[in-house]
Amino acid sequence: MDPALILQMIIAAIIAAVVYTAIGVAPGTDETAVLAPVTLALIVAGIPLPVVLAFFMAAIVAKKLTDSIPVAVAGIPGGVMSAPMVEHAMILKREGQATLSIRKMASGSVIGTLVALPISLLLAALLTPLADVVGQYASQIFFAGAIFLALMSKARLISLISILLLAVLIQALRHFYWGMGIISEDKVVFISFFLGITIGPMMLNLLQLTVGSERDKLKSSEPKTITLQRQDKTESQRWPNPFKVLTPQESASAAVSSTIGSATFFMSPVGITIFLGEVMSSLAKGKVAKACRAISSMDAVTNASYIAGTLIPLAALGIPMSPMAIGPGNAFFNAPPVLTLENNAHHLMSFSDITIASIIGAAVALLLTYPIAVRYARAICAFVFRHIPHEAFIGTFFALVMLLAYMDAGVAGILGVLVLALVSGVLNRWGVNYGVQFMTLYAAPWLMGLIA
Amino acid sequence: MPDATSSRSYLQVWDDTVTLRDLLLSLIITTTLCLGGYILAPERPPLPLMLGLGGALLGFVISTIAFRPKRRMDEEPSSGVGEEPSSGVGTQTSSRIDTTSPGDAIKEV
Image (tube, rainbow over all chains, first blue to last red; front, side, top):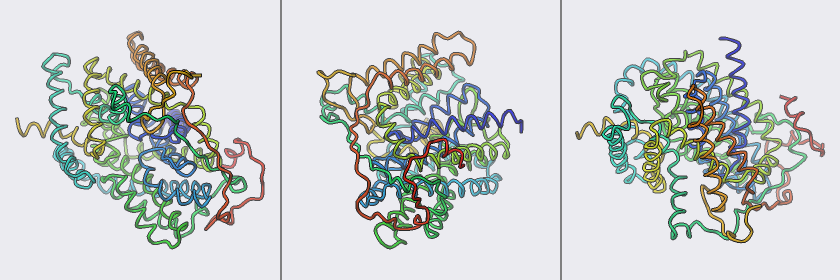
């Protein structure tokens, strides 16, 4: 590989590690919403794919390392995936063990990453022969995936119903664009629909503000109160070796969980995380030990399922066949006009390109973020909470989505995003997860073709 | 500092508190800079996209400087109960009390 390209990958990974360390700490920043638009923009801008992949890998590793920090320090999740950890982290926080909590979680993250990378690449190599078959039946597989994820979710019935409703809405909008002559018949609008689903929950929140009665529900007389736990100074000095921070049993649990989390790459990461966290914590005895076992294993699984969910479909299959690939990592599979389902990062990058880019991204983020996150956890949280207003995050992601939608289909693209975001935001609130909605987006043309 | 009179009431948006005025201003500033950069840029790819992304970044910086975060920070004193780590980390405890500079953290990697 060209040394100049490797240098670019390292630089991209460093930028991603720094930026997503801050985003990871910020409360409420959803993985899909903060990663998908940025990755998409980079790919559409023509940045070489290995560089974008290194950026992406560093971003997920850094974000996963840091989004559990506010859980330990303040009891608020830094992202969707760290929400299941709050309960266990609060036990440790009450025991005055926030520092221990951070170290256990971050070490779990490291183990998750170290286990998931080789296992994903191995699984990818094993699954590669399936690529042709999978490619032929992509639409049917997405449809089956949507049904599977719907059945696995808590809100089964509405999830199943929403597969049909969303498919109708998506195809209706496409035909509206074609019929009105806004988009030429040979072009299929995709990005603006994808983004519509992505920012659904945020957009619904914003639109609620325009309704008096709804706005009253969101009002509060007090700002959000964050109680920062002081970090134990003596303990935060040294650079902790993740394998020493965890007991052998915790390391083993984390490693086993990561392996299972990697192999179940096609399932919902949140579901797997909760399930494995409960299983592993039931093996430990004592309140603190149980909580430590749970958070270290959970953090390991979130890392593993994110890495595997991106890498396996990318290296082996060429279609986004996991909640992760179809969500945050979607741009690698479909970013028209640069990448399409038939000619995407899977086809354009060799197995070794993917391996090298992933290793560089993950390694840079681990080496940079892990020691800093563990030692300066409290300072990082305090900085973000004190100096970066939530309005700045909302404004920036809103603007990014508007830009990408405008590039996709002009003003009609922006309107499409708003319509779809309203519907998918409501569905999301009712428990229809991103996985179901994104799978439906892919299956929609085929599904509606059946009733035509 | 944002208005002290009109909106003492906060809003819960996307899991955090904001004020309506600052939120609207931030949305308008950032979206205008972002889309404006894209639309007004000379039509030589990838210039429009670059200027658009630059606009979004500029909007973020302006919002960060112009608006105060609406969060209240309480600081808890360092742990009372269970001072002794339960497992594993005992060997790691260092006796140094002073804070090390970030530079040292990087050197040790």
